[in-house]
Image (cartoon, rainbow, N blue to C red; front, side, top):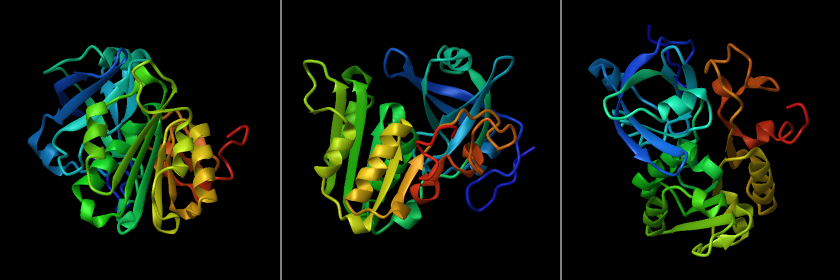
Length: 287
């Protein structure tokens, strides 16, 4: 059965997995890969729509499922990119899939980025680690509609220089008008040409109008909390700062309770939250 969709982009009930096939597997780093999927049923492909920031649940029969952010262009929902780190039972098996292999897919789930509200504003995108994957669709959305937004600042931080994904994509974004791309590594190698240190250090070095800016943050929670506080100190309203959280999703629809955050379930009420709503919980022991 299909899940009933609400206008806010949430899915109101669990759906049976639809079948998807791998049309391409891209090796990113030693333990990172991207699966490009396509729903096998033409009617399902025609009906599928997602918002940047939403995620799918990917299933392997007899093994289990895992939530993965959709990293492709929302204007082309017929092919769905999922960038995955092979760290657990399910993701290690997903890492072995190749062209023509099939798996189950449920979704899209969750609340995405507030891009309609952000139109007419500058955009600051602050990410850490693999944090770029949940927000890359939002960047592509803004790039494809460049005239709707003001200045665009993309700040990506990694722990090790070798962890950086998609260097050609960053280079292409940096070549766009009114766009700044800054990269940071805590531990550079001898070829690293960019900032050494915390990615949040770069917030004071890029140009944007704080009072007319929307900020999209994704990555480790301590980094996002530090980034949000720095943005507020620079004059960005806390109502214009949005964070994508990861809290151990299992069901995807708020039934199992594993991802509860105070009064919310991250899989159902997020994963994108306004900082003004959750700032009292972030960094608090027990939450």
